[in-house]
Length: 322
Ligand code: GLY
Image (cartoon, rainbow, N blue to C red; front, side):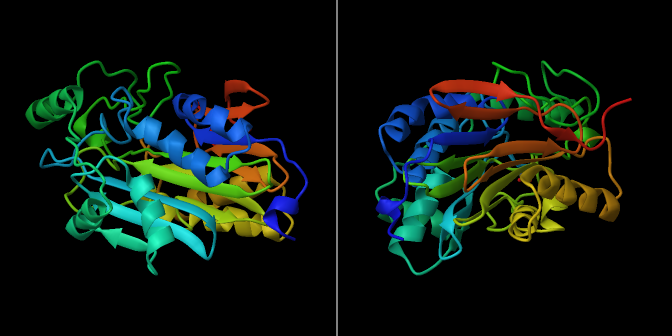
């Protein structure tokens, strides 16, 4: 069936973390007016990438062990329509560059200096990626392995609704977690799309790339089934192709929440989990149903539907705190 002849659907945006709502509010009017899911996820992620208060994505994201911020991201509407970019160091909007790769090249993924060069060719402006707050956090981490203003001692990211901050490490050993905005959308035409953007692991080994820009790991979209995005410890997600596994489970008949929990159970079985490890998944199926599941407490998802923008607790927590 031609896309435009599908019945009208209720436009829906779903994101990881409560800060996802900051992007939803920017993207909402266009989506509600009949805009496409691809435009909505791009607009939402670009707003978050530009938000200095969000310490895990774009400007404001924490740098690598040499003090350099590098950004990863991807966008997808189907297996034959996806784009990705990793290790950008001079451009702010990985999702927009990933979309250009998807729409204007025969490739899926560009990396590093060549990806920045491609962004230059596309007329993307160069940008300073290291914010003053991220530089201060790096300077303190270099001295004593801690950051100013930290909260909690588990070392895993924790949603502080309204602040944009999720990194709360108590000591250097805890800086093993990392996070992402993953945004999923169903538009009025019934088309699903997703995008993912991150600055990756704080103080990571230079060159490290996690799950976020890799199709099937941080993001997967099957237009007939569902879109899933994953946030948290990328190395765990990469061990099980987390987003692909969840969508595939749904294709075989699992409910969205059972599919997300299956991914978490597999991670729990296959890894020696540390207290700092966290993995959180959000799903939006082709009928517009959404849910989220998380390995541990501390995660919230953002949902926008019928003009309401809400941060919601996850539908399932595999390992609740005692
Ligand atoms: N989930 C983001 C990362 O591991 O880079």
